[in-house]
Image (cartoon, rainbow, N blue to C red; front, side, top):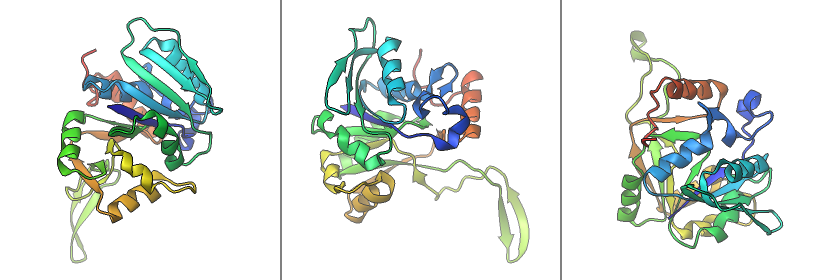
Length: 257
C-alpha cells in the first residue's frame, strides 16, 4: 500500500526555520521531520511513498536522492518528465516525488498524486505531525467500516489552563487539561480511490472542502488515537519536539534503530 505525504507547503509559521528550506526538511535532532514520518510508516511495513513537493521542492528531491535511504527514487517534474536516482545500496524505501506547484492548495496537490497511487486504498498524511500511532490498527479499523475515508482523531495539545466554575465562582484551575470529548484532525488518513470524486476542478483544500464533503455523505470515519500526537506548526512546537528527541524521550520513535 502506498503512503502519500503532502510536503509542498511553505511553513510560514516556522519562518525563522524555513527561510532557506522547506518545512519537511526542518530537523528534529539531526534528521528532517519528513524522515521521522517515513520511519513511522516503514516500521509497520509501509515503505512505498508518494511525496507531493512544492515550495523549495528540489531540496526535498535532493535529500531523498542523496541520502541513500531509498531503494529506488523517481522525481516527476512539473512538465511530466522523470528523473531516476542512481540505484541505492541498502535503502529501505521506494519513493516517488511529484512536483505539485509552489502554491497549490492541498486538494490540488493530492489530485496530482492520483496517477501514482495505483487506484487502490492508500494512506495520507501531512509533513508536520508525529504520533505513536499503531498504523496497522488504523488500517484494520478502516477496512472494517467500509467507508471511503478514515481520519485519525486526536486530542489537541493543551495550550491553556482551564477554570472550573460553579456559577460565577472559580472552584478549580486545571493546568495542561485534556478534554476526553475534544477531538481534532490529526491527519494519518486511510483513503479509497473514490475520494477523488469529491475533489472538484476548482482549487480545493482537503480540510475545508474534501473532508466536509465526505462527512456530509457519511463517508468519513474517525479512528480515535488518545495517545501521543504533536504537530510542528510553530517554532515553539519544533523546539518541544526537538527536546523530546534529544532527551531520548520521543514517543513517536516506534522503530528500533
